[in-house]
Length: 374
Ligand code: NDP
Ligand code: GDR
Image (cartoon, rainbow, N blue to C red):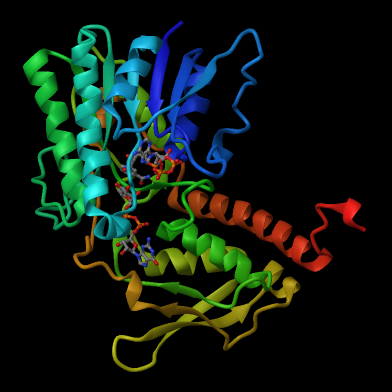
C-alpha cells in the first residue's frame, strides 16, 4: 500500500486529493494546523475515528513554518509521495501579510525539501509542489505554457516563484523526484468563500433567497482560465507516476472574465443582468428580467441593483489575463479536463442554493439549539 503525505489537507484541493487517493487504495496522512475553531469541515466526511482498527486517513498537527515538526512527521510517516498543497493562498491577502506569505509559501517549501534531504529520503520520496499560473503575472505571451517567462505581480506570486525554483533546484542538485504543477485557477463548491467564483455563486444564491441585498466586488474585467478542482488533483497524482519528474501546466485552455462569470451564474439561477455606468469608474449590475426558480422565490425584481464595485477589492498590482496551454500534460500524462466551464458554474450554484436555503430556513424558523432553556 502506497503512503501519501498531504500538506494543506483541510483546503479545497486537499479534500479532492484525499477522495481521489482513497479510491486508489493509498494510506493517507494529512498535516492540519491547530486552530481555535474546527478547520476540518471539508474532510469531516472522510475522517476516521482514531479508535478504528484499520485507518487509511490519519491527521497530524503541523505547520509549514515549523521545520522540526515537518521533519518529525515525515520521519514517522515514511511517505512514498508528498503533496505540498499548504499555502497562504489568497493573492489579495498576500499584500496585507507579505512576510507570513513568504514564510509559509516560499520557505515552507524549502523546509519540506530540506526535511526529505536531512532524513536521507531523496531516493524514496516523490514530491509535488503546488505551483501556480500567478507566476506568469504580467503575461509575456498567450497562451502560457511551460516555456513562458514568469513575471510575478504579488507577494504571493513572488513567494511561489521561490518555491517553484527551489523545487527545480532540489531535483537537479540531489536527483530528487520533484515536480511543479503550474495549475491555473480551479474551483468547486468547496472553494474558499473569498475567492471570486465562490464569492459570486454564494452571494447570488443568497440574494435570490432574500438573505443578502448586494454583491460587492472589484475588477470585473480580469480574465481567468477556470477549471474544476476534481480534475486538477488527478493531474497532481499523474505527475508523480511518471518515469522522470517534470513540470506541467494544468489548465482548461478556455478563458472568461469575472463579468462573464457573474452573468452566467445569474442566468443559471434564473435572472439576467444589465450593466449601468453611474459615472466615473462606477458600474452597477441591475436585474433586467427574472424567471424560473428566481421568480418563484420572489425576492428580486427588475431594476434591483445587485452588483456594486467596491475599490477595496482592487489589487495594488493586478494579473489581468491568464490562459493556459495544457498540451504537454495532455501528451505526456494523458490528462484532459472533464468538467466544462458551464458545468462548473452550475455545480457551484446548485450547492450554494442548498446552503442558502438551509440558512433561510434557520432564519425563518429561528434557531433553537438549547431546548432545555425553555
Ligand atoms: P486553500 O486555501 O483552500 O487551502 C490551503 C491549505 O493550506 C489549507 O489546508 C490551509 O489550512 C493550509 N495552510 C495554510 N497555511 C499553512 C501553514 N502555514 N502550515 C500548514 N498549512 C497551512 O487552497 P487550495 O486548496 O485552493 O490550493 C492548494 C494549493 O494550490 C495552494 O498552495 C495554492 O496556493 C495552490 N494553487 C491553487 C490554485 C487554485 O486555483 N485553487 C491554483 C494554483 C495553485 P487551513 O484550512 O487551516 O487554513
Ligand atoms: P486569483 O483568484 O487571484 O486568480 O488566485 P481570485 O478568485 O481571488 O481572483 C480572481 C480575479 O478576480 C478579481 N476580483 C476579485 N477577486 C476576489 N477574490 N474578490 C473580489 O471581490 C474580486 N473582484 C474581482 C481579482 O482581482 C482577480 O483578478 C487564485 C488562488 O487560488 C491562488 O492561490 C492561485 O495560485 C491562483 O488562483 C491560480
